[in-house]
Amino acid sequence: MSHHITIQNVSYQYESQSEPLFQNLNLHFSKGWTGIVGKNGSGKSTLAKIICGEILPDKGIVLGNEFVCSISQGTEMSEEELSYFLYDDSKESGFWKSLLEIKMQSVEDYEFLSFGEKRRILLAMALSKNSDVLILDEPTNHLDSKTEQIIRNAILYYQGIGILISHDRSLLDEIVTSCVFLEKNFFSQRPGNYSEGKKEIEREAEERIHNWEIAKTERKKLDAELKRRREEASLSHKHRSKKGLDLHDHDGRQKKNLARVTGKDGQAGRLKNQIERRTEHSKLKEKQIWDKLPEKENLGILWNSVPSKRSTIFMFDGESLSMDILSLSLASHLVILPDSKIAITGSNGAGKSTLLRYLVKTFQEKGISYLYLPQEFSKNELNILLWEFQNLPDEKKAKVLSGIHRLGSDPKRFSESESLSPGEGKKLYLALHLEKSPEVLLLDEPTNHLDLKSLEALETSLAKLGSALVVVSHDRRFVETLAKEEWCLENLSVVQKHLDRI
Image (cartoon, rainbow, N blue to C red; front, side, top):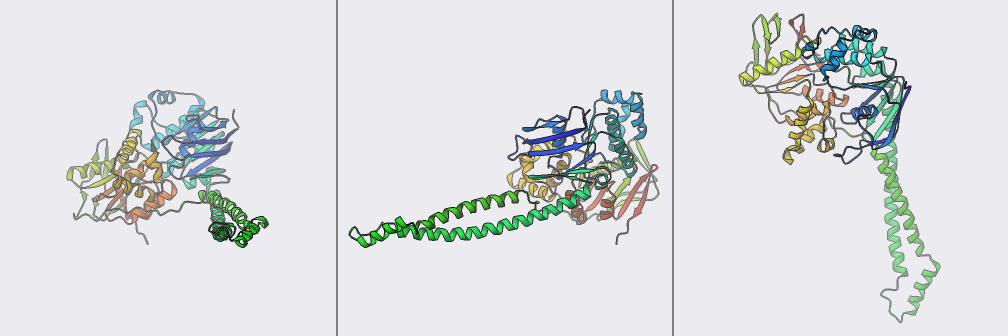
């Protein structure tokens, strides 16, 4: 049984990228939960795959990772795995099924479950294996508050080495006892929860900025000194050179010979060489500090959107709304106006995504322009998005990269990458459609998979949106910041609320 995982001097670089993702990475994981945080594309999921042994590092070793179970951000699984778990009547399996409130009766039911319900099943399957090491990648995505609490309770029961990749600040603060922070060209492991580690990281970042400013000032002084020394050395060279002297100017040649013998003028050249060496050392020191500075960020995309000229974008005045296998009763009319900002909320499985897809279908039929961001992209859809981007004309590609940058990701990674993370997929999809002018944006759980900086950037951008917005979200802060109206799905009905914001 493993009691520790040790990562020693690990380096890894994707073949398509010009710079390593990790270089001389050293980390230690012991029993209890360790959080891994960082921007989309910083290497969190890649690090998880290295720990699992799915990816071999270019250099370095991982020790203690013989029995690892990992749950990725998706919900795909084989029918064989699902069947084995569902019909496993062991005490261990029964405990986790009960704790995570698994109520599925047959394998065929799985495709009709919400993403949140599927995640609970995946977690129950992983926990029932009783592995030495458990890696969870964004376990609370797609979860309502009740289900999130169920997940938290289950995670706390786990007694092995837990590695939690998450952007959920409250979960990180409640669960983890140490935290790994991944930044571009920089990593740090800190004891304590996320908030405690973040304070320390921010303090160190300020210290690095201060050290860089000192190094920059020193280098500028040396540059000025080097310029002066070079001028002196140039004059000294002229004093010692016989070039241009008349062959019969014996006094002049004697003075030149004396300068060479005494070395007084040659000293300027030696001092110049010393300053050059010090200047080169100073430049190297400045660059080393610069490479580890926090990246300057200019976040927040701009939407090319204006309110629709229609008086009403959508209206339904019936007593119930029938959508495929779901019917919702209505207490009042459902209306979307050109400037509406609506949040659709409710528990997992209440029908939020179904209602959003119903609106998409309605807009298609009526010829109303819209932009729809689905809750998830499949691996194939992510590959298609990346292919679409890579085949854009240079001018269009530059605009998309600008949008990606303002959503908090490194544009270079998108140019070089062969695959995208779910968070990167969402950013690329939004950046590809920035120049469209939809009458309504329909976003299904847009904050899932986004790092904290990107979430704030998206929130700020949507607050300035000119067109109508309909968003499905479990993120209460996100909802209260953006929405003026809430459609709450509960007990097969739609309860409408107006959100008064000061």
